[in-house]
Length: 188
Length: 341
Length: 101
Image 1 (cartoon, each protein chain N blue to C red):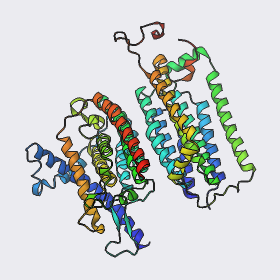
Image 2: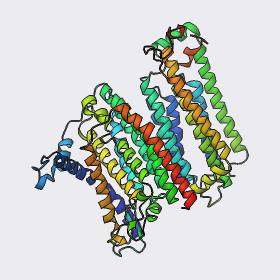
Image 3: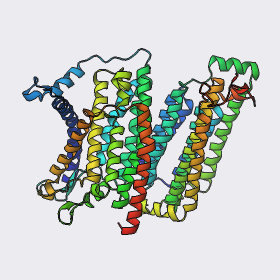
């Protein structure tokens, strides 16, 4: 029980700090801490495979990607002078209103979920004992019952890969015959 | 407190101390071997045959001033070396290094020579290895120096690229051994084929071993893949701005990563503690010998091969090593299906 | 006393609400993407908890798929962020209000 509260507190605290942080680099690192805590919770739930995959995929791959992008863009802090000026000229009080409305909406969501969960009696849902799932059973299920979904996932990854390359490619204008000729799109 | 628990705590401390001292020994060995390869003498003044040189180095590092660039991010700058060293130490926790022992009859139940027996050990090693990137990236970014930043970015790109081949090389062994637990994998390699050839996975996975070693060298940022710290272009890469003990921690992390990499290679491909002539209880001697051989190979490579160019490294990783690793896994899987595990 | 399914679901609800709040409140594209990851992880937690309660592995397999989708989403999302940043030198979503530039 204590480890559940410990991991839960770390996960919630780190996630809160992620959205309270002004510096994106810290946000990314705090999110990694939150994922670590979630991974601990998965171990408590007898899912060591998911716990390790969580670290490998989320912390080891996706977050590195985020960190890379933050560093490449040199971590621009939120609301630079420029942004504020631009926004003031465009839509005066809109941004603040959206924030308050959005925050209220999120709080409402939490209240609603909480209410729904406590309504049918908080005592229910004790876990059955001895349900340790091995990697073997997961693999067997994944490659038989979920084989089609698994294959579709590989197509999804391929599409994402191509999409990312196409989107992030910096177009070479100087090379002979390569890249797009300077047109109206390159003008700012 | 049962005797077994005390023994386990003792084992954990023992592994920690041994890892620390292995780094010191490796510094000495590296300098000595380098000297021999280049027909020099190497360290010989401090202590008999220069054996106390690493100790002198540590004392020197401890008394140096801890410098931090003015514009550096103070928190991350301090955190980065700690992350690096922690990841390096943590990975060894799931590596078994000997058969179960009762410590010459002192214990009633056998003690497993492994800090933590996890049934997904290989994945844990892979996960911790992928966390090691953060120490380097953050060191590069928080230093606020162009050399550090470029070194950090290069290093992380390199580690991410080679992690794939590394993982696929591991997968080949998993398929054959039919287990994710390292001690199970080692135990599958006991005995011999035809009476003389040890049942090491090296002989059924030669390509896998080659891929593992190559990717392992790249993962630990060692020559000929040591771009992160290519002196000629990047000063000292991601740890350019580090001094004193924080620099020592990066240094420590590099050597401990090498030791872990060699220990995992020994468990996966070289039969772990199994070997002829010695009884099972003295298997750790075999283990140490094999790890030492791989470490020597590491040092040997460093002082023999010139450094690759960065684009060559990337091309090699993605266009040669990764396809090879995929083919290796496919052939292995087909073989297991056809011949049975 | 062991934590019950309900405890895990409450925790997951809190995390999901934090993620939602992040998407609404923050004006930085990267933080918004991070908030989406928080929401996905909250859902993953419910999957694993329900899977444990039902004694089946299907929950864990769904987590596997969610992670794949998250990886694809992060790759494409970050590529778009880089492209947007190249055009406007800003990460504030409000500065991308025009349909054409």
